[in-house]
Each structure stands twice: as C-alpha cells, then as structure tokens.
Image (cartoon, rainbow, N blue to C red):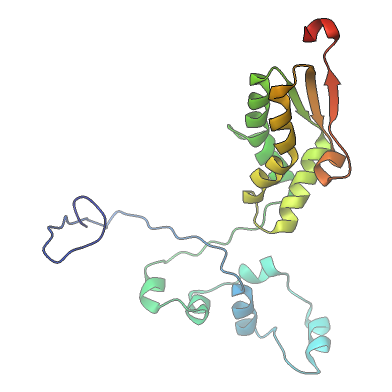
Amino acid sequence: VPPQGGRKHPQQEYIRVDTRNVLFICGGAFVDLEKVVRRRLGNHVLGFGAVEQTHREGVLEKHEILHRVEPEDFLSFGFIPEFIGRLPMITVFDELTEEQLVSILTDTKNSLTKQFKKLMAIEGVELDFTKDALSELARQAITKGTGARALRGLMEKVMLDWMYDIPGSNNIQSIKITRPAVSGKGKPVIRRKTKKAAA
C-alpha cells in the first residue's frame, strides 16, 4: 500500500499490510441474482409448460430463493473465481418490514424524527408524527425498494415546505404530520400561537 494512500506508482515505496487477521466484507443488492439461483434450482421453465410447472411446484418468493444462493451462483452472475474464493461466507439480508422501518424512523439514536423535531425546536415549533404517518412513510419506502435509504428523501419531501415557511412565521406553535400529509392528500395539523404568545 502507498504510504500516503492514493494510486500506486512504480518508483514509490510501499508499506506491507498483514491481512491474516483482516475481515473483508462486501455488500450489495445484486439485482437479478435470484434469476441465476432460480435457474440453478430448476424452477425457471420456458415455453407453454411454464405456467403449469410453477403452479405444480409452487412459486418461491424472491427472498426464499436468495436464501439458497451458493458461491457458484455468483460465478454465473459474473464474479471472477479469485474474488469468490476470498469470500467464504455468504449472508442474505431480508427486506425490512414496515415495523422495522418505523423503528428506524423513531427508535434509533439519531432517528430522522428526532432530527426534524430538533430542527423545528430551534424555531420554537413542536413537531409530532402520528403513528399512521410513520406507517405511511414506511410503506412508501418499501414500494421504492431501497430499504431505509428511502426514508430521508421521503421525510424531506413531507417537511420541505414547512422548513422554509416556519422561520418567516412567528405564530406557529406546533405541527402534527398526519397520514394524509405524507400521502399528499392533505396538510399537517397546524396549531397557531395565541396573539399574546406570538407577540
């Protein structure tokens, strides 16, 4: 490895790195890998008998198929044998459920709901989310197919207008994000300050 990192040059010194006790972890979505596994398992049939065979044998769901992945499937997928040989363990992660996504939104140390509540608190506004709103955010994230990564974008989409409107307004006491507000069919519930409190 070059001492300062970066690219290797022929006249450059190198530092030896002992990799005996180093664990390498690779991750990815591997789009269409289940098709490779399905082909190996023999569940993929072409032609007129395809519909009959899937009804007869039962259709395996994508996550069930991925749990049967073998190193040879990655070879068929396009990985080189030298690379596969260096990754002796293969683990499959299931897609996050609605409940797990809601937990990520609310229960983690720096959850998105806590972050947005703090941002609103700086402006003197109390922010709250109904359970239905959180469930709707989770459902939308599931439909995007990118897991928890979709949550930030969805949350920002819901909060964007209010994040710009609130600093210029001194009469908003609290905002409650509801399911209609998340789905785009309504607005959040706004509680305004009394004239005395606003003054």
